[in-house]
Length: 110
Image (tube, rainbow, N blue to C red; front, side, top):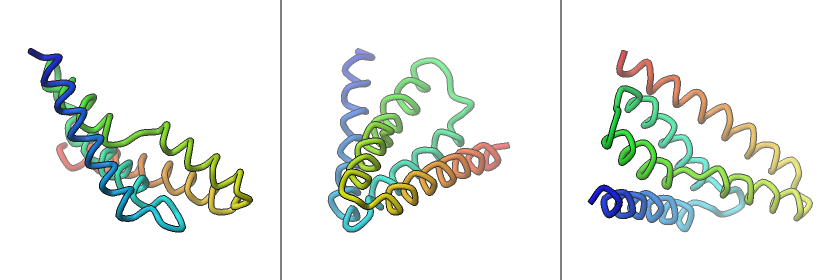
């Protein structure tokens, strides 16, 4: 049963990320940036979860909503297309906002 819930929850997260990317990824991949930042904040907030709730919420839902493989793909694509400043901006923004959002999420619940 947990496997079915895991797959269903991961599907919801992946669909949410895809919808953001479809709407906001234009010149820069802002949809991915938003998804990674929101997921980082949520993971910080949910830091006290354990067991099945942790697996479903932090791993399945927010793990599929945010994806570092997509970030890596987008950065390498920007660099390959000769847009190295945009690639660096996307990388640095993702790291700073992601870590900052996770920290704020942790502070939100403590």
